[in-house]
Length: 234
Length: 296
Image 1 (cartoon, rainbow over the protein chains, first blue to last red):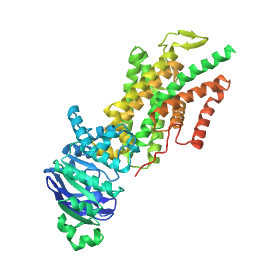
Image 2 (image 1 turned 120 degrees about the vertical axis):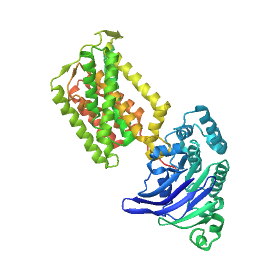
Image 3 (image 1 turned 60 degrees about the vertical axis):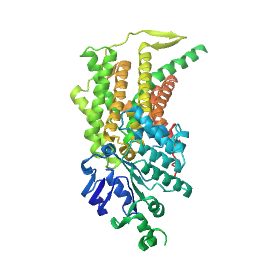
Image 4 (image 1 turned 90 degrees about the vertical axis):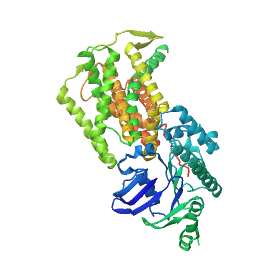
């Protein structure tokens, strides 16, 4: 579904992604794990068009994404939940969700999707007229995910959904990620919490300083000596 | 005693009329600042161009007031978009001081371009309104005062409705809060920035026409002082905050006419800038500004 081939990305002089290749197949949960600065978020931002690759190829369902404007990538069926949630804190929960459906025209269909989001996150329905800046961190994460789902993506990119959340909330968020996947959305998950990420993913790639150093079935990776030492605390 | 009360009311009427002009200009400042964090110092000069387009529409095209107002608003909306595309867009990722200096450059370009094309000669606005005066309890309302207030209130309500309830308005608020996140929603941020300039400039044009009608004369440098005052109004209300600009504008108008009413009209401008200084010392975020705290 999504294929990256030999992608190089620079921040000015800094070579952030050094010839990265990976793929995500339809229906999978794939995770990119690695420590701070390994290039996980950079990979997602490059897919969603916020950053541009200097060289290499990114294709989604056979289409070259490098020539698509960032605001048009959503229309192709890719939606990103950015790191740090980035909800529009000055607007209400409903307004945030409406903006998630910005490119969609059919009002009744949008209402249906919104209902679906409320089913996944009942908390958002309780707070729907509240200014989203007043929500708790966990609720904001739910809102950011709900907002991304409003575009009915085929591929959902999640950047550090567990960041700053209490363990019980992390569990809840991850079980919802599985639920979203079960209803047909492919997921590419970036996580520092390798333990949680490997527990729900089908496959995983391990990034280190801009390169993929390991890849494979997530159960096998979770069992491997290298990953356990480096990312799972022995 | 009664005469003092009517005096006060008279100054309130004058102040609201003047203040509604400041408010219209201040809205453009604040909207542009809200969305790209640029103090668009050319904004007062766009108002001047608006005054001239209105004058042209009335004298040369023989349009009545409302069509002339619309003509001027549309022309300036286009001008605003063109200025943004040519002068500011290439500097989107440059330092803020570079954009600010460019804005001053655009301001000078419009002022002295105006001098060149239109000559420095002061033009007289034809009387578009009857000289009717209404007297309510000893307070005089000029026909023009009422048109000015009504026009401003209608435009501000339209703006409020657009920003709060339409798709474009929501996109504007989203872009002004977080451009990258807005891109992730599929919002074409460049178009939204253009809309913002268009709306801000159209409001300035309306203010220009109203000023022409109210004060009868226009000249190519007429935008400087009202532009600066509207900037003060925007800062007073809290730059980037739309209701702040409305209230800031009205307050500034009121303060000025009260100062004039006290017989110190030569101090009017000084008082306006004194307010700026006081706001910057006491509450730099303005009346409506709040320190946004982020939850993590």
